[in-house]
Image 1 (cartoon, protein in one colour):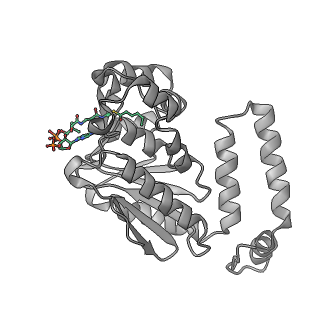
Image 2: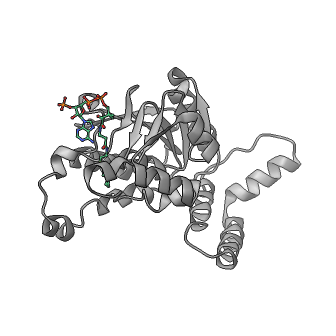
Length: 257
Ligand code: HXC
């Protein structure tokens, strides 16, 4: 399908979504977010897609929420429309998302990235939460997911100074999982997503949901949830197939059932 602000392609079992507002450094206007919501909703219904790669341009993954679009909003408009609540849709996508980040991932761009499950960064990537320089604070996870990703002191530094960190720093801090040459970012992400998509789709979704539960639950509840989800997977044909294939020394054929 064609979208105004993103490109949606299929690469085997992987959906590649490219933020495509390069002149505005992929500033995340309402239209981009709506396109992402529509595309991920279509992907959710498509059994042939097992994972998603989300990327931007060489210069910017996304330079934040669209400042021009929000600058004149009143408190009442922001509050009554629950501005930015709809971005939560991306965090609720059940299929694994690998973000491939080149250039700037700032403000809402960094927050959108943190809604992905794995981040591959190009050497030229830069991350930050510059909202304080605009007289606001992060509004889509920058004070919450960032702390969980890199800890209090490092998150506070980014949120309070509005400064940026580079890709290697982000890797050391645990914000991203790998740094690769910028021209390889999308390929490495596609390769990883293809591997993920080769497994049983309901199992990958269960793994994602269970890891994400670690951000919401205390340890005892998290372990209990993990164990119960683990038990439930014995209802799947794919569990029987995966374990039978191991014992029979052959490759499993998963059917998502
Ligand atoms: C709207 C933006 C934009 C943004 C860049 N542009 N970022 N438009 N919203 N967030 C536009 C510029 O206005 C300009 O268009 C064009 O993109 C190119 O940007 P330049 O600034 O000319 O590029 P450069 O000099 O290379 O600087 C790159 C940059 C800078 C350092 C990334 O653009 C920048 O500081 N951007 C804002 C970053 C930021 O503060 N993000 C947080 C946003 S607040 P024109 O037409 O003017 O030439 C936020 C809140 C999140 O995200 C809350 C919850 C979601």
